[in-house]
Image 1 (tube, helix red, strand yellow):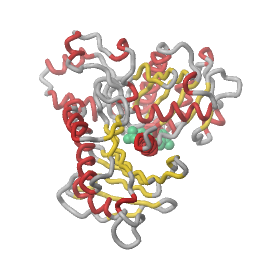
Image 2 (cartoon, rainbow, N blue to C red):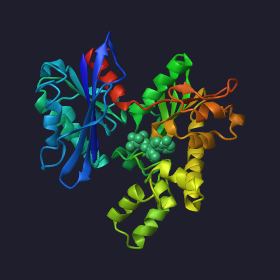
Image 3 (cartoon, helix red, strand yellow):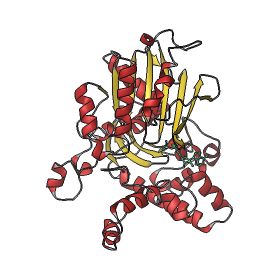
Image 4 (cartoon, rainbow, N blue to C red):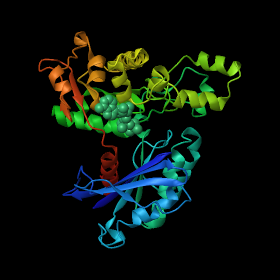
Length: 403
Ligand code: ADP
């Protein structure tokens, strides 16, 4: 079975082709593509690579922009000399990452015209993301008619959170209008939970976990027996932790104040989403690597940005802890979580009283899918690679095989 995964964002697209061997989707794709739509005005940067090879440019063919111009990219998989597949029918299913599934979708779902309409109706909740996912679904349905397409939702994993975690203390009528906490990054939080069970060699059903997805966007989940019982993102991916350029949670009174001072809604939106977080505080960059380098060179506001990031991370880890009755493991994932030993060290510093103690040597040694806690620490600290595309392919394959 070959599963094509399409992860379409507002300004980029990633796609991978996975092979299934003996009923399991192989973790390394046989083909990958990445597209940056912001490369140059009217020109996308498209690159592909085959398993074992390096990235190679793929000609950007049309000035029309958007996902529509990627038809030749996908067709190159089964057309032309040296194509990977002999015919289009060798693709057995397509898995699409869809950021927002609202309250409706709790599972990966076979895409029908009705599901497509629902994703469209949810655009107001994810204005930057759901339109891109829809465009991807439409393009691939056109290119691969009759081949099942599956939507895997970023919100789905959190849909069974208890109401106390899912609602805001706002007028109840707002909740009835859909203003509630949805949570995001669910595909990776769920992947981390499953992988943690494998690494710890314990059944997922008995585990209590806190998973930290720390990338450009950052969120935590409290996971009890494989179910998300609380998370830090909410109605939008702006709530919760401090992020690369997003503020995370702030006093809503500040927003009222700025609006009263005459700031436009669009400007406020831009500042909270693009000019805050690490970038806003450091004044340098939303990239944690740049902040860390500047901090080492003595840049005062870079240090402040780092300290604020860690302070908020620790505060929210504490909040997640309160939704659990004990903690078996704390999991770090995402670009920062996987690669930044200083962030992990600062997040876990002096938490011995909670049973959290990491081994500095293991932490500094580029850990991947392994345990970095000291051997006698009661709570394990794991570093787990985010493999969203593989998780989507696996979900798609399970659904298509009726598991
Ligand atoms: P996205 O959320 O867009 O998928 P990623 O998960 O790739 O993003 O995470 C991007 C973040 O990871 C950036 O802040 C980047 O600086 C950070 N990052 C990547 N490598 C390192 C590293 N070696 N040390 C610290 N931060 C890193």
